[in-house]
Length: 519
Image 1: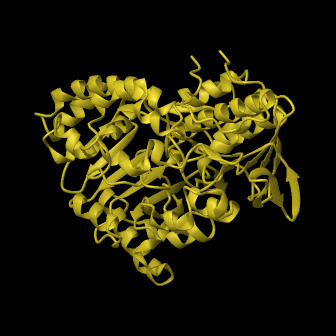
Image 2: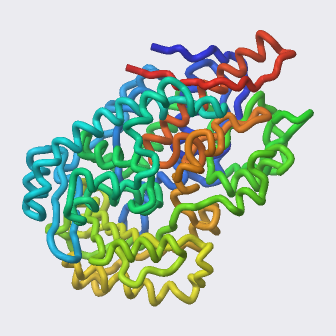
Image 3: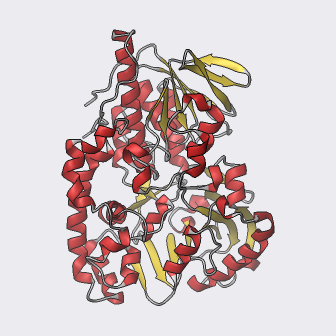
């Protein structure tokens, strides 16, 4: 079903061809808008891109987990296509291997009986509670899904019927770890159901309990690998968008949003003004807002407020092309430090971790296209503080790289250094300098109660500007960003329709809007 407004003839400029920008372009083009998508890089995807390094090694730059395909599948369906015809998604089993440095491990799976058996090896008393966790979080997601599909540009949105119905399940003042104590006594088991808060760049000891739904989504719906890497999803979206008439301009960095009489009327690219009836910004919120939108046109998010915003952590990345295969290493492996709570506390308080936890992807185990035959492409992610820590990464990188390589031995990777045939390092300094991530907060604004829902930058930002991406509602993570694009597209299309029918009325109505549910 398509209940979106018609937009024939409307000119829309989208800044940034990340997941949110691509999804918005598809939805708006589907309704007849003349969409021009500007991307500063020579390829689409933003950080959701896959690069081929010398020697034929392929790496996802950012996201490597593809979760909950339902939302993107619905967007493709609305555009008259099947996601499965454009992207080959392989469901992983086990979906990842969680290794506890203090002892024990869990090979996580979406098969709940097998998952309970894995947990029983670590904590027999906790295993019977897996079913109860799944049942209660299934209900929580069912109640909260309408909230995630609702715009929050009106403070009354927090009192919407959907919100009031979901509130009893939210336990808003409990943390993820605190909520999990109702099911699991063993802290290692709680970590297997809470490390996913790192997808938001947050600590499970601080992240609101709502986000127990993250691990539920994985265990209920599975973890997928797109053949060719997550960048293959971005490329498929771009191809479909282009087929629908979207004008995708690569290596075209937007310099600023152009305003006239307090309203966005276009963008400036390489000194050229390009007219538009509305502008959609898909980029790191704090960086893009400051660079593209004059402060006078963002009264709720002036520079001083952005400076005080609470940010997610950052990441230190190694992309390693290795000689030889790694048959004993699962597709995804997470090593949780034996003092994980202290590890997370160090990062949260802007200190370098003394005993880092880390995540490793061995994509060629599932997808031979990701590495040359007989070789491996190893993606290593280590959570670290963002740039507010003051860390001098030019000086710190050699020491920390050596520490990370030493830490890899904990999961059996003992001979890495001698096998490296390609290496790329991305530090927090690079995330800010090369990838335009404010303060290198790779998961955007923190997802605490004061920066969620109405208190997050609005999808309808104001003055003819709209936002998509992890910095706006509903937040970070690929499926959530796709949902945010649906919310933003619907708001924009409704505003255009109102402007056509009532040109003298304000373009920006203040009422809750739910994104269309595509069954």
